[in-house]
Image (tube, rainbow, N blue to C red; front, side, top):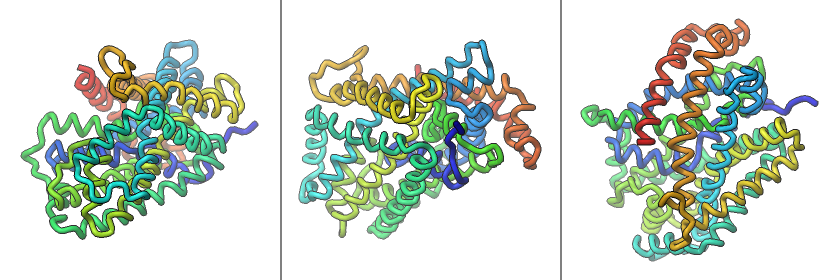
Length: 444
């Protein structure tokens, strides 16, 4: 049986960019910009994405396409009878953990679409909207219900396969996401005082750049691009042998960065126009922005559009996370895609229930003093992701070696790439150091 795969270059870019684009682009990136000097952070971030993000993404694509297998199978094939498949297992486990708690937040977007359509925010002060957000957390099984709906939607796409499911829907969802952001961005830049928000985002004050800003930009870049969780290895395994991996990595990185910057164009003008600090994370998305839309001409419609945007962004990410698990079940456990999707979805639901219910006051669902939700977030973001990314670049740079690296990015010498030596140097030496710094800072 021939292995499923992407049918076009656009499909590869849309799906891989969709895996990287998520809720973090919409709320976390603007928060990082707001907390770290505005334009100064953006300048550092763009430099890191170009110089480090592309090479590390390329590393994962190389492993996936070389082996044409899921993360575990890839390491088994490329380095048999060794401990390297453990890194593949870590990627699958990480995708499973992230899917469990990320689907909780994704479910909130559906609840808030319903609220927006019902004009539930009209005439309410910020304190009231914030309290309603808190009250929603305490309706534990309502959270679970929306979480299950979101996992079902994700499973529906993954069940269809790579070409007929993931690629097909990515080609619809990603352009939709960009269009929604552009519509919201046009409205935001026409608000009174919007110029101040744009100036904060795009006019860097380089005196604000320090070690903390650089480390924050490093962390945002690596985590935003879905590195270390097995997604890019899995998607890389579906890329055809004659596709240009380097241009694909650059295109995906640029698409992800464009979405993040467009989110900044939406949020900063709106925040500055209404005197709000864009540093509140989840509170900004589910409390502050609805209040801002409340005061804006046409706010009812823009509020609905915004929460649809969040749902689409979340769905493009959950699709990629579930596919990592499904690909593992299909290739390592030899299940059909149908049963692999059902089993993976049910597993994520089972773990996700604890993540959702742990946010309810007095639930008692804690691990080491942290809610189950927060503990899953911490383990994945601060331990599994950076360790996975670190060993992936070490594997490509030190185990696979320069000859194999050159064969993959030049398609056996058919492509000319003058910077391949520089890219390999970054993967072998600079990327491990950068990722190690992120891990040390995040963990300690």
